[in-house]
Amino acid sequence: MTDGATWADYYRENEGREPRALLLEVLDSFELPGEAVDLGCGAGIDTLAMLERGWQVFATDAEDEAIQRTRGRVPPELQLRLQTLVTPMEDVELPAANLVWASFSLFFCDPPRFADVWARIGRAIVPGGRFAGQLLGDRDTWAPDEDISAFSEAQARALFDGWTLERFEEEENDGEACDGPKHWHVFHVVARASSS
Image 1 (cartoon, one colour):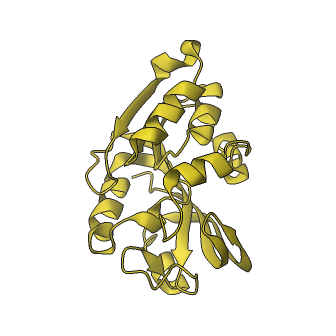
Image 2 (image 1 turned 180 degrees about the vertical axis):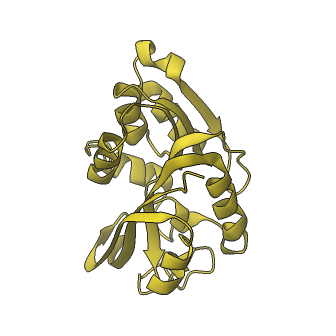
Image 3 (image 1 turned 90 degrees about the vertical axis):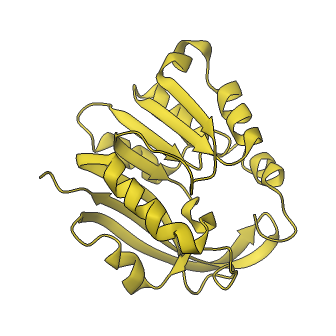
């Protein structure tokens, strides 16, 4: 988390939010539910949305509180389709998945290790599966932080060489974060892995 805010602050601030609209659109693009990874699952709001739609979900986060909140959010009848793990994204071994969902989480990947994390995401997604989530743009307030992974548009697009980009939307505006006002620069991405 950036200076002045904690992950607990983030979880509290976002407790009442709805599942991300981008996630729901992506889930609707699959004919049948499958295996999903929620990478940096936070308090589990999106994890629950996937479980409710019939998906098997591997939810992982570096924060123990995130996994506790995720498990507490999921009703007993859905727990059998949920696997959780407390571990940094830089260290997690990802299972094979039809969908890797990374909602505002890859920003916090250790930059020197991003290429390895990205390669593991690519290997985890089965042929015809999808990545969906956000990448931080280079004009974001947080971008200069040495602990933050941020990209120019060209760099972000280059990550998806060999994929089919189904959505690549740039968002840039002044807004708020848990630690106060900030300038947001974010790429919202949905990409399908090659079927071969």
